[in-house]
Image 1: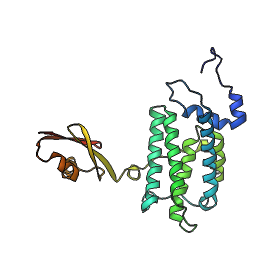
Image 2 (image 1 turned 90 degrees about the horizontal axis):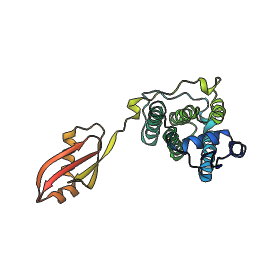
Image 3 (image 1 turned 135 degrees about the horizontal axis):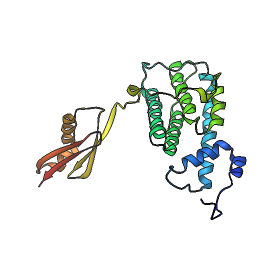
Length: 247
């Protein structure tokens, strides 16, 4: 957009129609700082829908989580609740890096949107399931604090709804727990002579030699390299195994 070309969108119209928070989140989400903003009516409406979705998920859980404390670091969890808590801490890590180190608000916002989607996808726990509800509370509270610099008006309302007496802008930035944020498993791509042939799932942090052995033992790979001469097996940490063979 350019003033000289007279194609600038009037911010007053955007604010009056959708609110200041929608204007802010759209402008920051639509493009990274080094690129020009491409105006999109659909993008504005999408930002508006996201904030409404955020409001709805808060009102849905508010009465059940308002009196709960955040879960302890060592809380034993399983299934979707363990996954949601992992997602919460992974989001803190990503948003912190994207804003502090890269100044990329667009990817930070995208990460928070994924967290909100994750909250929607978990089954609603019963009112007596305080362990699961405390995980929901942590995810909701984290969402508010991470979004506060971007959409200060709605996040202040939500922060007060959660029972806080001070302003969200005075809240400490959340810190992620690296143990909670770490994946238990990872997917490793298997290539033969540089071409994708299969994938395996292995424990996160698994020894490189064990990953190579698992790749060679994978049934599809065994069939494909049968009758060839194995030259070397290259492991790119946390990404892929490339098996080099000759006929």
